Image 1 (cartoon, rainbow, N blue to C red):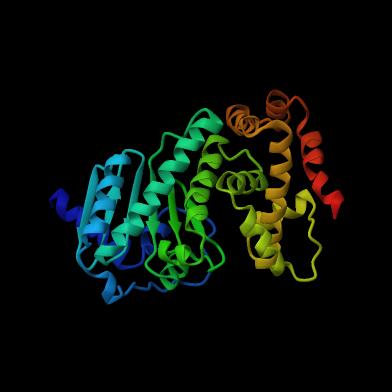
Image 2: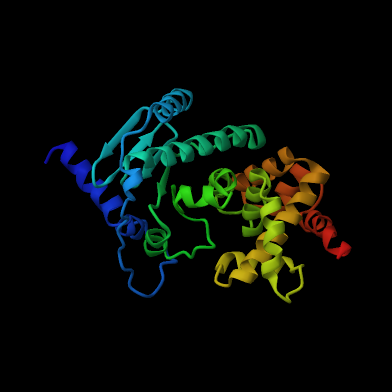
Length: 304
C-alpha cells in the first residue's frame, strides 16, 4: 500500500467520520460511557467554492509569514495546513481553509508569546482539529457547546472556528487553548488545574468574556474556595460551577501576576515541570511558599 493511499485512509477517518475514531484512539480516560454516534459535517454550498482573489492574497501572505510547508485539500473530505510546529485539519469546503489558516496563525502567535513569558516552548508538534459544526464537535469529543475544546496529548480538538468568530471568541479561544496545552506540557502535569486554566485565560485576555459569563452563576456566590475550583475544573460537569471556577482561577492568577509579573508565573510553571515541588518552585519564582502566594492571590475575594 502506497504512502499516499495510507494518508487518504487516515484522512477519511479523521474528517469524514467527524474525528471520533481518531480521538478515541488517543487513550483518553474521560470518554463518556454512552456509545458515540459519528456525525458528518455537511458543507454549506457557499463554502464549497474556489477562494476569490482577496482570500487567496490573504492565504498566500499568512502561509509565508507562518512558514506553512504543507497545504493539501481533498474534495469531500477536507484539508490540512501544516508548519514545523502545527498541523491544522479543517473540514470539507474549500473556503474552510481560511478557518484552518486562522487557527494556525493564532496558535503561532500564542507560541511566540509563550517563548517570551516562559522562556521556552514545548518542542512537540501540535495537531489542531477544527470541527465542521457543533454537532460534529460534541459527537466526536463528548464535550458540550459551552466547552471550547478537548485536549488529548498533543491534539487540540476545537469548536468550529467560524462559530467562535461569530460569537466574538475566536481571537481569544484560539490562543487560549494553545496556552493551556503548553502550560500542561511545561509543568509536566504538576500545575494545579486552576493554574492551567487561570494563566491560559490571563495570557489570552479572556477577562471581558469571563465577566460577561457572571450572569450564568445564578444565586451562587461569586467566590469559590481553592479546593472547590480545583474540583470543578477537573470534572467540568456542571456549567455554572465550571464557569465560576474559570472566573475564580482567572482572578486569582491575575492577582499573582499583578504582584509578581507574568514571567515569574511562567518560571513557576517551568520549575514545576523540573521538580514537581510547588513550594520549591514558588520560593524560586515568587520568593514565598505556594500557600502564601495563593492566599495573597485570593485577596480579590475580600472586596466582595
